[in-house]
Length: 236
Image 1 (cartoon, rainbow, N blue to C red):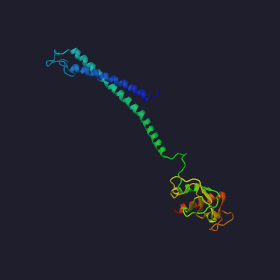
Image 2: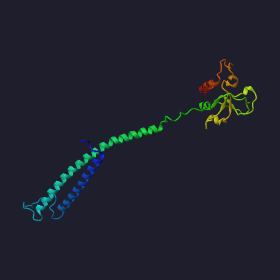
Image 3: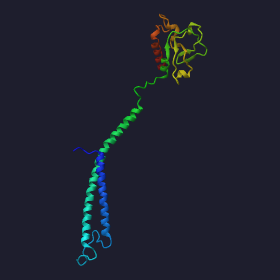
Image 4: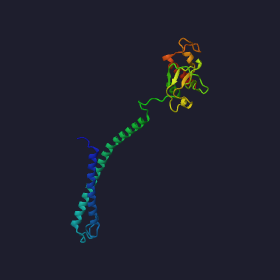
């Protein structure tokens, strides 16, 4: 026979408790009758000092009540033992469930504090600024006196063309809200004229960079900018 579930055990325990309550009511009633005047008492002697049956009580009735009281006490003790056994079984079944629930809640709480796999990783401000630059050959523009200098790169607003030294090589197409770039005044449409050792004058195929090495152009420009970013980050 399989182990009864907790619900069935509770029903059995409730039924036994109800039966015990009824027994206790009968026990109280019989005890009150025996302890009343002329009732003979629960343990008092049924004979007088001379050894004769007491004439002041109904001895057969007292004996019947006493016997019934003893039987009820025995039944009460048995029911109490059965109730205790059922309660232990209920507790034993409920304990693993409580442990499982606690473990589940702990895992849920830990998971809720872990970053979701679908959540993009947080990037630092310098990397965010780099990803917002579009590599493209832009029309020649002047470098105004109000050009912004931040993190070793220079950005100027798009204006009329002037000198080749201020020729931009990338356009800002995104500025992360709250980033250092935004705090420094960088705006959408601004053009990048220099970034570390990278400048528009070095974007010409075959021209040597200031360090004596060839500076990449076109599709390799962002890789070079990324290398510059790593140098800026390492130096900071």
